[in-house]
Length: 359
Image (tube, rainbow, N blue to C red; front, side, top):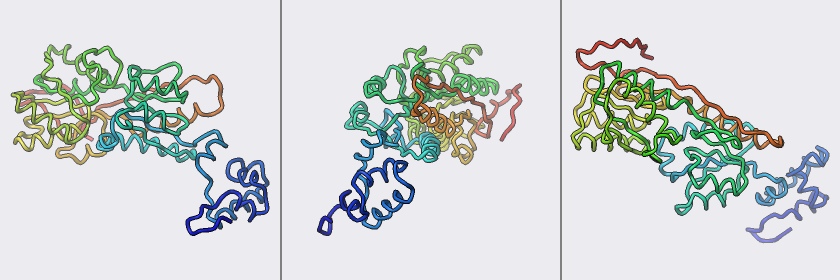
């Protein structure tokens, strides 16, 4: 056995102690079916006693798999984890991967380059969140040859995808405020707001914007560019962008936020400005994160099954990794619904014809 206090136990040491070949030790960890249960268990017991750990890269090369999938985001991890949506989504992915014996790796830009991070990621497949067909990173994943599931992006024949009815959810939110008599509105978009000038582009921001616009156009409500502001999907982002809009002279009576976290920030900004919610300002979020039940007042929002979205993405990817040659990717669209709480109310002297139930 190799001497020294910091010496690494090697496969030779385990083989010698167990009285087997090095190949048998390798089989015990990577292909236990090639040995009797008794022999494989005895080898692993000896390895544990000696403190032997198989080298992860060697195991990967032997097994032809990393037993790990990646969650890819175009934003830095600090920004990602500041968004409570991502934490809930990742929880859904992790629930399924752990059940199947897979690990999870978060992939974010490396030294400013997401392509570099993808090239270095040792994963079997990728769940790509917030990356549409116009992102160069998608081509980088294709070059690497990894199976991929796109989340909140249009379906592609060769890749799986999971999305929600963003446009329908946005229509429900806008219809709710219009029915309450609100016509002076502010829309808070979320970063990254890609392709904002091309509302035909299929990404989350533009799908929701189309939904808002459809209802407002039908109601004859003009929506100038100054009424669409962009913020990070965080509490701080929503607070800052509303304060800035107020300083710029905008006086909305209703806010449509594409993010619950940003909407919660609007509630804080309103308190700072002495604006009463919902008496003077109605606010609607999007996502129905757990925090919406505990804001002051509880937030009216569009429910989307965030955790289930993560679970479905992981299932599709793991199914694609199974040995089924030529199997096309699955494409799933999940439903949204309006959840009315206490952050919205009719304008003074306005009688709403909408019948809603507080939850």
